[in-house]
Image 1 (cartoon, helix red, strand yellow):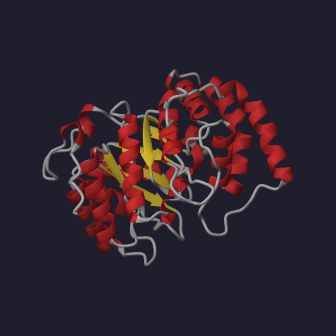
Image 2 (cartoon, rainbow, N blue to C red):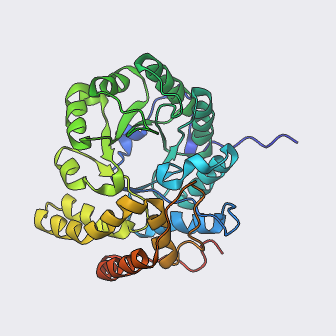
Image 3 (tube, one colour):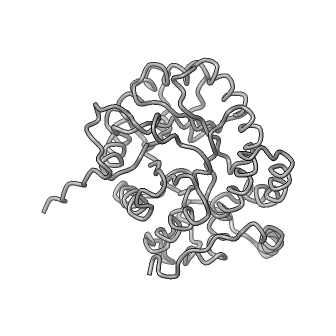
Length: 330
């Protein structure tokens, strides 16, 4: 039996319609990235994913982004990726925007993911160029044009470091923004990302509707000063990231820098262990049931590293205030 077609949520029209989010609901704030939780046997853990999505909202996120690099999207089947998008859209239920990760090893895969995400109710999509054999500039233009046409919602360019990413020159990023309808936003996370943001903003002008950084929010203070509309970190301490963001938005530079210093030890250990730490923190906070990773070659926290994480979380505890209803994911 063929699967039933997905409904288009919240009144989305065809891919040829305009892209209203950029003008009526700007993306702004901490756009948190849920991990993809797995059971001890390595299967998708949907109840834990629902708790992750709810946790992002309760912690004050301005939006939710999944599945992307911090979600181990590259370990998921295409069917699982669609399930993650559908689950996150359903759990957030229009309370915050959803950015669906649609990167693929080829244009055809990304187009399929983008078309699904738009129909499933995602508010925008985000993609890196194909990440096994990397395309040249003209192919990249064709790639984003195809993704935008398929999605029917605004597109984020994800400019990410090699080897998975294809770092793009500011002139090419600006060209994508100026020339392709629907390509409106930039997630910049290559070397010297804040400076790249400044260059793209200058070159693209009004064609750039917003830009955010990544890399766990390490460079948020610099990026904010350059006009970033937010950042996209993994979700394990969304409440702490939101505290920094709110201080920035209120104009309290001293407080934002003080709070950022509180976060730095966690950001440092995350730089070594990546999603292993994201999942461990969420597990310790009772958000996911198991910290298992699927990624080949994932590092493990030995006894000393685990003890260091204990100390970091103890110091950070005053900022870790978000709770979720006990009924979520049950």
